[in-house]
Image (cartoon, each protein chain N blue to C red):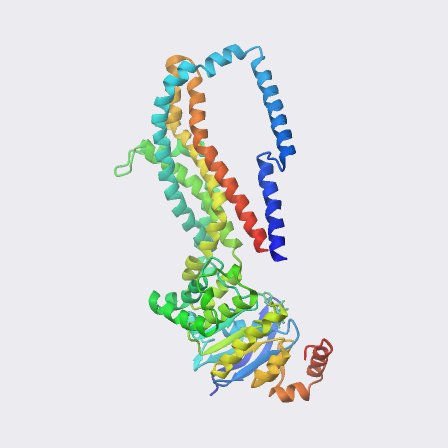
Length: 286
Length: 247
Ligand SMILES: Nc1ncnc2c1ncn2[C@@H]1O[C@H](COP(=O)(O)OP(=O)(O)OP(=O)(O)O)[C@@H](O)[C@H]1O
Ligand SMILES: [Mg+2]
């Protein structure tokens, strides 16, 4: 009985998950899905290709030789994006967790910490990322303080960490709040301190639940690494600008987009898959 | 001096006064059952004894330590008092073994090997050895509740608080859990038990306390409470239980 419930719940989620992909249930609907996809894509393709400006657009955005020439250079500079992303991500994961934990400490003693953490997330979620990148990237090195790094790569990383940690700490916090208080009570009743209960009982469950939304934020972060081009840091996007300036052809932008997509699409798929799996588990448990 | 002493314990949630002056003693090795209607304050009382809820007024003394004194080390107190909840509250992300060893390792500072040895002994004693590496959601309700009891026992508490630990179970699973409690009682464990299982209270308790609207209205040996209660409210409560076929 319980097993049957479980399977039914499972297949319902399966339907929903495959619906995202426009997916088919049986053989007949597979055929229909394929056909309608083909029709829609062909129609869209025709609209673009028969448009009056298409020949010119094709020349300037989809020019094969230019693509082949610029792609390796852009890919090489994409290493900077990856480096920036990985570095920022490591700091964000830790710093955001600190913020979320500070914010969830109970009692009047911790009020100032809760307030500071809340103010931090409000401010950095409210500032457009691009503005912060400009302010820190040009402002701080401009101060010419000794002992303060003047590297623009450094300040670009700091900007992304500040903004994204504000988002990620909210994600963590929603995870912490989703763990039922009875779990903490059970841990405390075993004589664990509040920190031990948080560390061993609350956080492991909270983090497991927020992996999909965390990944979502990291897809955003991967894309926003392109913002550091504004500071003159050479990365994929900046390199494509250089290539475009040299050839007066926009194809390098398309090449950059392809490179970003190659990284973000697998991550997006993984995120969706994890979300579907989590939902399946929740249903199976209920 | 009794092992557990409560004096004039008051507790309110906002304007809802849930405990209105509880006086209660439990002797060492005594099993005391709390009965009473839903909402009469049984759970709140147990949670106060374990300091999961701070009391508003009154004194609670366990094993000579006044828990309600200012500056008392709550973590130390809790290590000596085990509590088991109606809803098991096992940690779903941990195996049975880790559920049971968490307290001894983190709160008592036992080594992993020591804690696991202790856990294995207890799991064997309660017929759960084969579930050692299972996760809670693969266990039946009865098994989960027995693991929850073992988890509390792993700290070697001097007092066990059981809060309606069979209410969430299918009827055929109630017996296996109650047998565990009977065995603990036979082994001399001091227990304070909130229960709706009147049959269990009658055959296993040394004393039964009837809680009504946050007060202990009547208490005494089970034979007397169940056969000749003096308070009209107790009579009404028991009459309803009999009507429902639960006694
Ligand atoms: N954390 C809380 N916040 C607010 N009110 C609470 C809280 N816990 C309990 N109460 C209230 O206290 C009263 C007594 O609850 P309690 O759980 O102690 O009763 P009980 O005797 O255990 O009932 P039951 O037999 O249904 O378990 C109820 O009115 C309940 O709504
Ligand atoms: Mg209760």
